[in-house]
Image (tube, rainbow, N blue to C red; front, side):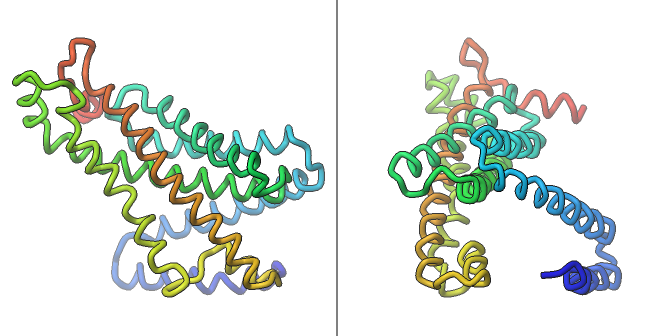
Length: 257
């Protein structure tokens, strides 16, 4: 695709802009900002990846992965302002999930340690982990706020912190995992996944594209489970003090006051 064709494709930005303006949705500014940011960010990352792929240096590969983890962490912690130390919890989760998934793939020789494969797949893993962490934190904080009286009641009756928070915690984990599971149920019937479509457009054999896409689907399911569980079980402890007393989302409430 040429830059002229890319400029022509901006027609697809004009359509939502017109709809937002006509219906007075108030999204025009957000659409323009999102478009400009995506163009700038993707063009920059395109030049960076070209350099990294040509050098194929392990150091540059690791630096790219760390950059993605750092950006994802900053994006997630904005949603976890009620949980003390959430930035370290999210960072530890992203690193753990990346090490687990990439370690298994490289250790089992599923993929070679090459920039063209490690970086794109790592981006999918980290991106999905980020989204799942966001989904979990949003649901978990809502559950905690709705169930604070129940949590305190269980504690007052002699229950431990794990028992008190168990229902809210598992509900948030379950809710955050459902979109990934449901999406996989209709994969190939309702939609052709992004990686598979990209490989086919690039001229790859359809069956080869399917195999790669299945690998990504399996990875995303592991990412969904591990990221939600890790963030959840590290986060809930922060809602109680050393005496096992429930303190709730104190940071968030302080900001609102």
